[in-house]
Image (cartoon, helix red, strand yellow):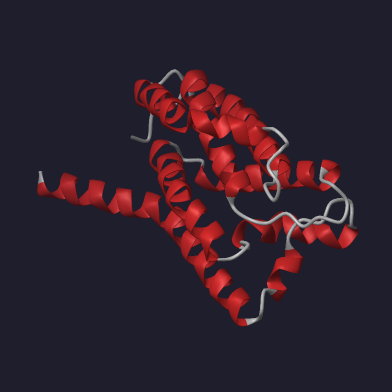
Length: 196
């Protein structure tokens, strides 16, 4: 019994580390950015600028100051931990949402803008968890899908243009990427044993 408990604890820690490490990297990046007078923000996604493609990889780690980072941190941790605990796909989902969502922003974002922050990942994680739960047909995943939908349904308003300084494009394409990944990975996992 003690061995099983230790193994469960070990597995939980291992599944939690990726989300925690990414949050730590976001905070370190913001501290460095503040120390450099905000000069790292230029490495966000700059739509249709070839040099702005780098932002697809860097934008989730860059924020417009501590209030922006604080606003993203708790939700990122909750949703990221759920993806890590519920599936074996944390890195696939994170990379897929960042790349697909980032490309969408790069293609349709307003020229002359710079898109920063992890909120595209938040929207991607939320959409992934809801769709994955339905597509995988696993009881735990379905319960998580319902809870995520009920708790985070207000995120839908962030998918539409209209709020100055908010990257609705990042939210929209992050969510679309999460839907696609949730369908693909959920259907694939339907016949596999659940990791939890």
